[in-house]
Length: 323
Ligand code: FES
Ligand SMILES: [Fe+2]
Image (cartoon, rainbow, N blue to C red; front, side):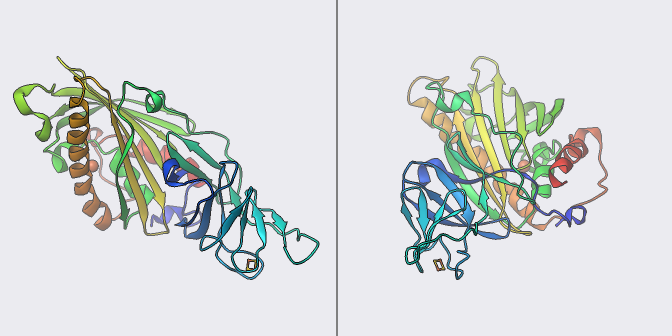
């Protein structure tokens, strides 16, 4: 863990804690994030909720055999029922309800993801994760999860890696020939980084069809969720949408997920082939990052050149979420 963030190890921000299609009506799922036991459930009205998992009555975990009754979750042990806002709704064997409350977390479902707002002191969010128009657009293939990693690393290391320009053509040389920062924009909780790139794209170079130059803009909404749009230049203009999410499991572990969609720029089924090839490239590249992330240390004073990318700017921006 970074020594700078001893006081507040998990940033105050939005984090992916599930996927909409993985949470059926009335489903209850135990979660472990931010070093806490949590319970995620979908009430009968369709709303997703997250509460601290342990029932204040005698400590049972609501995520294991808790059941949904209307808009409440019923503890399996003595049947106390809890509302999505954490208030006790009913104690089945007495005529009063205690004033006690479970901690509840703000939850949104956006772009097929279930997002939770984590705040160290339980404050409400002042900003939201925006819906992506391409997510519902027929011109793009359905946004697919590529893989989930549980990596022994921190969000700080993960974010450094994400804006690290120089490693692209060194660690991921099979995909990137070169990369250069063109623009950075910072707007409150949003950090945006545009790069020009030259690709090798090993799996795509069949027939020399694929353009080798392109640009990518990655927009970070807090440190745990970012959206990238890649556009290639040339005869065929390929568009790729990637979402990366990093959710702290505890002080030492991060859950990372990648989602991908491609613009349907080719005839019919070829788009599915294109999505599969880009998925393979994305996966191969990120598999190279994992052992680096798991064994590296966090350098407070790294030796950086402009060509390394906006690592310090990004750290500076991200520090707002730890305050
Ligand atoms: S422990 Fe939950 S109702 Fe008793
Ligand atoms: Fe990488």
